[in-house]
Image (tube, rainbow, N blue to C red; front, side, top):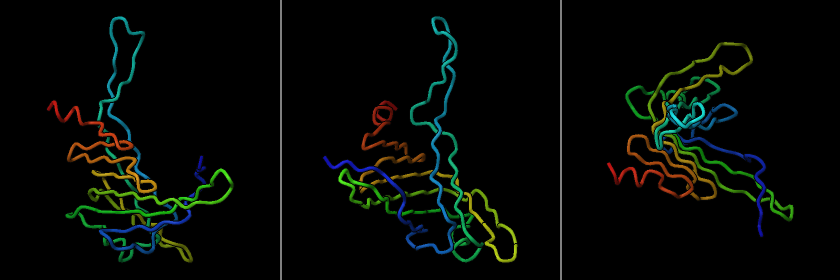
Length: 172
């Protein structure tokens, strides 16, 4: 059996609408998912239970880091256009025999401009700028397999190949 132990990100690049961005920060965060919840309580229930509403998520934000507010920063700083980012990377894994394997990873994020931090002026240092994106669409693929797809505007929520909202859409 070929058991792969995930180790680290070997390298990655970020693309905006297909164009490679230069001058990115040292790391790219991955958006966090947080389900909308409500409290279930009542007779026969011992206390409160927070239950998730299937397919409903809180606001998702991605802060895209840049070393300086230069051309690539402004290529996604467009209040009237959607932001379209793709991150492509290599994940290093170790096989059961100790040999190394590289596995592809791809993250796609689409959304709207939410804000920006232009950073600071300090001699000999990067400005540490960033653009904030409100995420409407999020896709995560590992080794060519779709692991997560969330499209808030088109009622799509797929986890590990399973369409979680298929039944909900058929009932509505």
